[in-house]
Amino acid sequence: MNKILIDGNSLTIEDVIKVARNGYQIDITDEAAEKVKKSRAVVDDFIENGKVVYGITTGFGKFSDVVITGDETRDLQRNLIISHACGVGNPFSEEIVRAIMLLRANALSKGFSGIRLSTLKTLIEMLNKGVHPVIPEKGSLGASGDLAPLSHMVLVMLGEGEAFYKGKRLPGREAMKEAGIEPIHLTSKEGLALINGTQVMTAVGTLTVYDTIKLIKLADIGAALTLEALNGITDAFDPRVHEVRPHHGQKITAENILTLTQGSRATTKQGDIRVQDAYTLRCIPQIHGASRDALDYVINKINIEINAATDNPLIFADDQTVISGGNFHGQPMALAFDFLGIAIAELANVSERRIERLVNPQLSGLPAFLTEKGGLHSGFMIAQYAAAALVSENKVLAHPASVDSIPSSANQEDHVSMGTIAARKAKDILFNATNVLAIELMAAAQAIDFKDPEALGKGTKVAYMKIREQVATLHEDRIMYLDINKCANLIQGHQIVDAVENTLGKLL
Image (cartoon, rainbow, N blue to C red; front, top):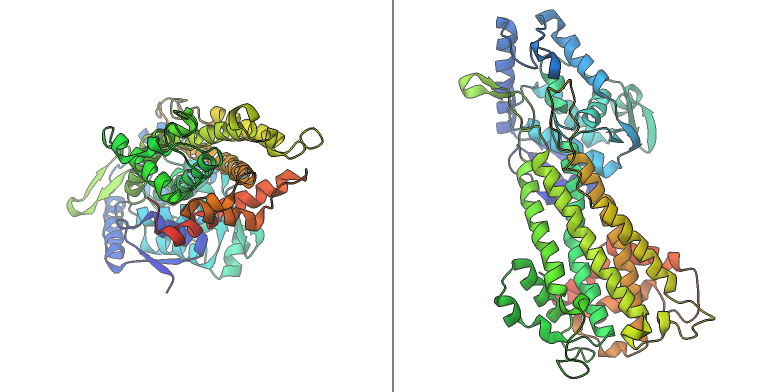
């Protein structure tokens, strides 16, 4: 049926990918719909009885001490959206916008937000019919939620703003009309319920994490190819070494390298050629493994956040209680996404150092810059430059966003997470790391061509052949960026990892 049922509690990272990238539709479960109705009834009761409740009958932020009369509550919610839509920069991609809409709908489905079911269903209908709001990338502090970008999402629900529909960028009202969706009029609590959450940072981070899961496997494949190209020593991957320092990621990486190089005639043992390898070969399990462990931490945080109620105030319908708290604060995800960026950056960092070992004849014993006629041809000289530039940029991007905070709302909101910046930076680092690893794959394959591709291990030979399907051996200089793009596309499409796993079974 290509449909995901949401209930606020059971969404998975894989579900997010299905909706964001594969066009799956969503619907709310009957049980969750009843919880939404029950929560809304509490809000209606407060309005009818004139209770003073933050965000329902008061202003927002510093204006929380301003009481709003019943006749003005609808204007309050609309004003909230149009005043908060202050995002700037390029719009998020369609897949990120779809993930944002899904995550916000799922959070509202938990039944703690006080939104009308009809309003939630409008958001679901927009997602299902492909009305994708234009949401600028920048403007969120990541506390009080992703207020600015989520406001751009809600503008389209009101028939305002802009949206992409069937490949066209249209005024929001026109996009809704073409899709056959009636714009809504917000009522009490609804504007706040729709924008007070961490769904933008979490959407960006979730897609980045999913791709990083594959990238770490690809990093092991690239490292194994380089290990064979340089006749690396496999003793360092012996399970006994890693059992006595049993970090989970380290053990997995060591096992992957041995699996990939199974049957290789290119690897060596201690003392065959040299006693030990440089760190970038010998310490692959420790370096890649640390990034693996960081990724596991981030995945755990995402699994919690994509099924969390993150707006304010929260409605506890069973005992008719409204509590103003801070679940909108992005700090748990800000730290996680900063950690993710650092972990990905390190995969690129060590990869670039392996590239240097491949192109440097003093370190490799191979022709300088992996070209047959050095001097006339430059070979991989500038490919290593490009990798170094990307790694250097990653070092800047890896500076944590979460260590910064700028008070806002007249110091009522006096500590913010910058979590959306952290997620966006991790995404940019992933792009750079993908291209660095693409260069390593190309350089390793070129180095292997100077030796014997038939000597490769069971898994690395599959990877080598997949690379050679797209990128030919370099006999004389040619336009290299085209080859880098082809190899990066192989990585982004998960084709190399999938081909290896089809032969060896799942890598760990």
